[in-house]
Length: 158
Image (cartoon, rainbow, N blue to C red; front, top):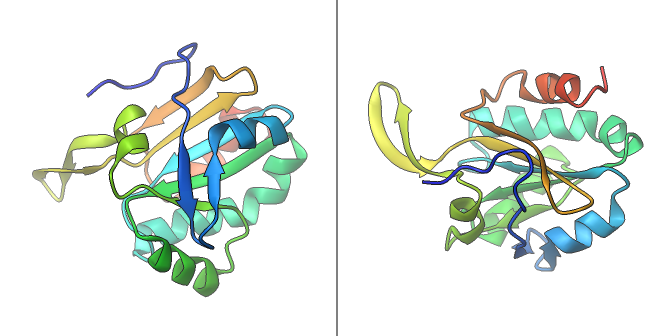
């Protein structure tokens, strides 16, 4: 599994969103002044993923105010993502990647430790892509709790 590093060209993606539309990295880059926060999470409506998504929701105004767009990507189907958006009033796009194309391209799919066992699945990760399409920050194996606060600090927002 290849992980992205600062300076790498971020793989483009176009994925179906919770509302049945589509979102692409290129489109998000064009809308953002400084970059796109692309975060990968294992499963909608699970405790850790809910914590992380709600933290992004609660920090969205600050991230957008600093010039960043946010998108969350998981292997969940759009219908499940729609339930997640509705239940937790999420205000940024959630994208469905059941074929794991973006997950694998970004190094967010592979072996990981889960409760002491080695399993294959989504590696909770965040990649910040600059408006030039280059990786500005890449974090892998992040903890859901407190991740957005650490990300904001790494981006110089706090």
